Length: 269
Image (cartoon, rainbow, N blue to C red; front, side, top):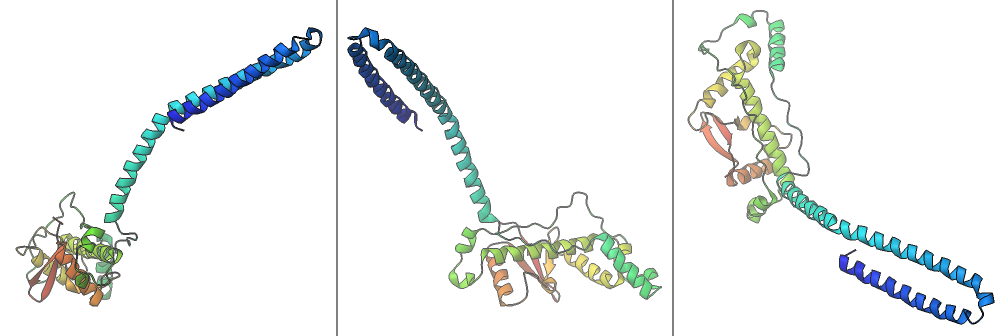
């Protein structure tokens, strides 16, 4: 209730109360014409007046409490509106459904593969490939994981209808999630020591390390076109359209490295 409306309501109550008092005063004057029979009636009137006074006082107290609560309620509403705007801004940049990251190649997984390979061929653990680097790069402490730079609805709407096609914000951002998973898996394989890499993966690890040292790729998260195997990003027409959109929006770039097509994750401008 607004403070102004509360005051108007209180004035109405007081006016009605005064009118009632006037009526009772007239009734008392009339009763005084017969004093012997009016004492009981006057006691009842006095009791009624006291009850009305208590009711009016209770109304005044309630109106005062509500008037004092109005500024607090306004501040709460303003804070709620600010929070709503923040949440709306966040919802624009986050898809309604974000699938979980693909399982990464962790040290214990790679070690398990090495152990399995050793069981199949007991001598495989002692083999040393020609051209094996003398020192394997060590993982830096605090290495950042592969980034997840989602696109916003405004960015998708800014594209031409021909480029956008039937793509939705959820599909594109789910594909970004997959790409980050591919890049993270490659980064872990590149940094893994040979003793924890299975023989079947060591050749790929060497290839990725060579690619990672290439000018334009060094220090960046990347994956190969051959890594694209879903679950959300696949090398079909939809997947190719998603890659085209992400190139246009500055989320990825592509470099040819030998027979490999390397896709680099870029930070949006």
